[in-house]
Length: 211
Image (cartoon, rainbow, N blue to C red):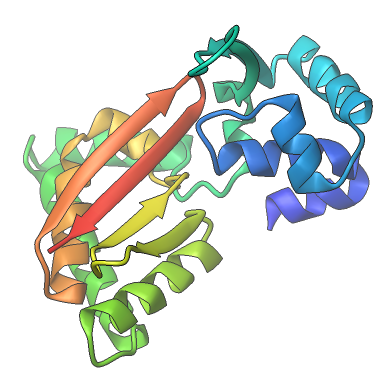
């Protein structure tokens, strides 16, 4: 919601660029131009300005033939533009709970939260097969700001791919949240989950392989 509101009051081209970069591990000006239907020079000018303001960085992506191409990526400065389930208050509250009730109380609180969240998803995820449930779950997560999609190959191997986590602040403090999330997805879809995380500058890509 915050991202959509900002798009209405700022340069929409900037937010279209940021949104597409967020769903990637980096894109060239030519790729952005093709996706957004804008001129190469127009995209380049916007990227240069966003780079100056600290929202983008660049790197040279190797090519099979020829010189490496210049690619733009988001920096961590763009993170607040996307949904956040955790803020400074939440982190301080967790620390206060631990000081008051013991070191394990924070973990117990998170465990209880993910149990409740699991039940909430179970009620909303519809489908008779793993494939149907995975697609439904991914759609719900995408609506919640996870930038989620469900990838199914020709051999029916299923992956859920996400480019944002609203829990990143709490994950930094409590890495066990990652395991809790994996277990949650496994319980909802009744599958084993193998998680793979990729990070580049301010970009992340979470892949959940289902089996």
